[in-house]
Length: 142
Image 1 (spheres, helix red, strand yellow):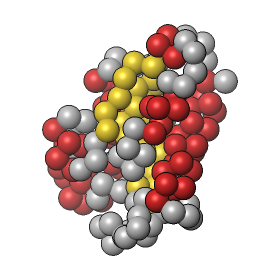
Image 2: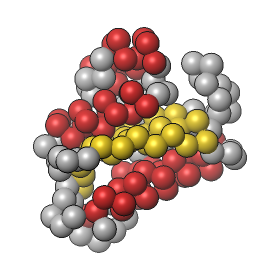
Image 3: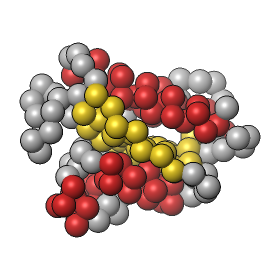
């Protein structure tokens, strides 16, 4: 895909994905912006994730990841929305295990949510989650 633009909605990666995307010279040609939504209030109020989604499935769910990617794409008028949400640790969240991460991508004619199970320290899980999101982006743009 040529001439794409991307916007990111990050939770568990805390801005790491956006940092990696902007490490490349010329990133301003394709990176529109992003939101780090580390709690449900921001996911709902800024990223417009439905309260029902957060209540019924939790912040760490494929449904939330998909809404985050869909809505950040719309908010930033980008061709692609990319999101991460998960449990980096050291403790479980919402009864979900450390290392459970959902990465989602949404474009005009595609959407995909990937469920990942990572192991390692908090920092290692964040890094693996950002890697998974980057790989998903490359799958649809290269």
